[in-house]
Length: 159
Image 1 (cartoon, rainbow, N blue to C red):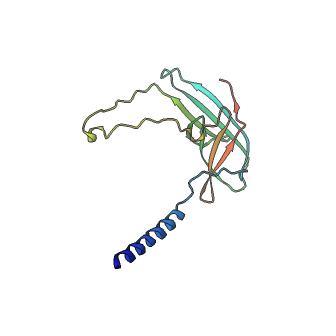
Image 2: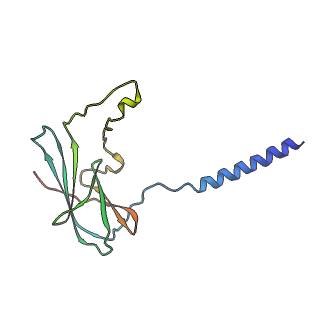
Image 3: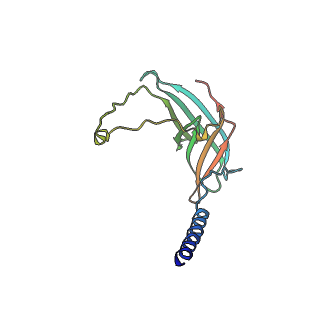
């Protein structure tokens, strides 16, 4: 007679505990800002190809900001599935993305997992922000919070 009561009581506690823990799961979906707190004048990208190392290629990206009242810090740019750190230059912001490389890394392949410790993981494109030919996503930090801004009007500069 006691066992059914204890069983029902334990089931109730487990059910309540599960529903409470589900409500505490944070929403990890990215939220894009409709309007950034800075004004982007232009974002230009220029494809490049290197003759020095063979078939190295990528993009140089130039960002011109005309107004930055809240002094936000531009962090990263996502473009065509690749990511790069945004740096401050003399005339604005810039980033360089390397899309291919001929550098062949020496990989150690072994049955012993510890022998492979020094291998460098292969960098694959991040398709999370791959929106098309002239669109990029700029991440920036404002008041300690990372925010995302989609910029759809990039201008292609010729070589």
